Structure formats: C-alpha cells, structure tokens
Image (tube, rainbow, N blue to C red; front, side, top):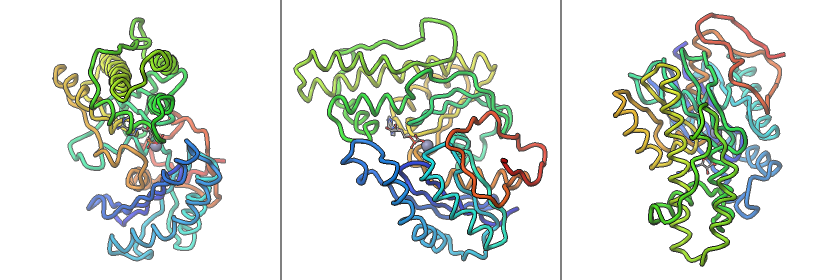
Length: 349
Ligand code: KG4
Ligand code: ZN
C-alpha cells in the first residue's frame, strides 16, 4: 500500500493532521495547539478540548491535503488515534477518521498513541531498525520497552506513580510557572546553577527498571517554600530538578540496554524534546559504542505525522479496523498484534 495515508491525532490538547506515504515519506503535516485555551485553567479541561477538536479538525484536514497537493480521493487509508487519551477528544478524531474512510471506501486504522510516539524516530531516520530499547517519556507515560520488531513490545519497566512529563508539569506549577510547565521549567533550568539544589535520583539505588517521580515534586516544594523564592532561586531549583530527572532516566536506560542485550536506544514522547536529556543519552550511548535516535523536537510532542506513519506501517502489514467507532481511553500497548503476521481485518470487539 503506497498510497498516501491521512493521520489524525486528537487524544489530548493538540489537533494534529498529516499525510504520509511509505514510498516518499512525510508529505505534509499541520498542528493546532490548544495550550492558550487551557492555560487559563492551569491544565487540560477535557470538555473544552473535545469542542476545540471539533472546530479545528476539518479545516486542518483540508489544509494538510492541500499542502500535500492531493485530494481526498487520492488517500489509501485514514489513521486516527484510537487511544489512550481523553475519551471525548479521542471520539472526535475517531468519528471523523472512520466516517471519512467509510465514505472513501478505504481502510481506517485505529492507532495506539504510544506506538505512534514509539515509532516516530523512524519517521526521519532511514537506518534505524529494531532491535532497540525505547524510552517513552510523555505527560502520561514513562516506560522502557524492548522492541524486537515493530509491533513486538516487551515492557521492561515503568513509573509506579507520576510520569516524567507530569513531574515536570506539577513541579513547574508549584513554582508558579504557566501550563504546560515542562518546556517552561526546562528553559528556566538553562539559566540555573547546577549543584546549588540537589534532589534524589529515585529508585536508582536498587535493582529494577521501574521509576517513581512523585516524591521529587514534594522535595522541590519543600526547597521552594524554604527559599527566598527569587527568580535566581527558581532557576537553580529548576536546574536541580531537571538534573535529577535526566540522571534517573539515563541510569535506567543504561540498565535497560544491559538487561535487553541491545546497543540502540530510541527516545520518544514530549520529554524527549528536553535538550539536556538528549545530550545525556547521546553521551551515554556513545560511551557504550551504541547509538540513540530521537524524533525532531516537534515530533516528540503530540502530532499527526506519528499517527499517519504508524497507521501506514500497520496497514502495509494488513492490519486495519472494522467500521464501528471505537476508542480506548486506557489501552495496554503490549496487547497490540505484531506486524509480522497478516491478520486482515481486526475489529477490537
Ligand atoms: O507526548 P506529549 O506531547 O503528550 C502526551 O502524550 O502526554 O508530552 C507532553 C509532556 C508534557 O508533560 C510536557 O511538559 C513535556 O511533555 N515536555 C517537556 C518538554 N517539552 C514537553 N518536558 C521537559 N522538557 C521539555 N523540553
Ligand atoms: Zn503523546
């Protein structure tokens, strides 16, 4: 299937649309962020997110098709995020995606959001092939996964409480930074002095590949409350917090590579845009004689390109979905069928 695939992402607070085909790669993509809408509430308001997806999705689809220089009739399939995510937001993308596919008589592919993230490094790195260890670090997930083949995922470890992105967001919020805190906190950390504040590297002092980040924000809260709360102190605390998260993620990545007996690491999800994490993992993998691959920062955070790409790969393997509009707000990636064996139509009911 070399015809272009339309990809639709609406799982949270970003409407993303893209056109991708396996022969030429990414042909167009567009993103509308709802950050300004939710910022006044300090976090995502699910009902407002759904309504804004309804307003923005079709105009974005038209714009992206025009940029790709194709019409709807040229599409060979429609991929949309089927989960995990906010149920109302997911239903907007699933409803539009399924309806469009039905009208055009092409397959609809319900993509797992985290598989979209996980495969995003392959979008622009032609040499990258499994096996590799994937570090998935987003607002809702922190997972280490052994990828033996595309679609063959073994969970090695995950967070027992807050995700890394969530820890960034909550910590930023308690120091008065605007939503979404992660990128703001990271920018502030650039001006901070390393070592003035030191926070623990949770769960690195014992074996295992799980994470726990919820205690860190309490440590930051105590340090912040006891401090002079000046701009300089805020930046120094941000730097201490970022170093703690980055060191913890890097140390578990190294363990995961050893446990899986693999040399290559890929990093995906919003926190993968963090420059200090990228630099640290680069030097770690170089030291080990392996390599690390990241999507460009814009494809680390939510986007339509990763959904069109994952959908194109699944469709090429003969995997697509039935006609019912069906989303999965919670969905374990380990239950996805591998792409190796053709299973034809797969209805999730
Ligand atoms: O993957 P994503 O866009 O959405 C989810 O699927 O969750 O990830 C968003 C998360 C947010 O928690 C955000 O604060 C964090 O990624 N993030 C960052 C950076 N850019 C985004 N965290 C640290 N440093 C960054 N530069
Ligand atoms: Zn995401």
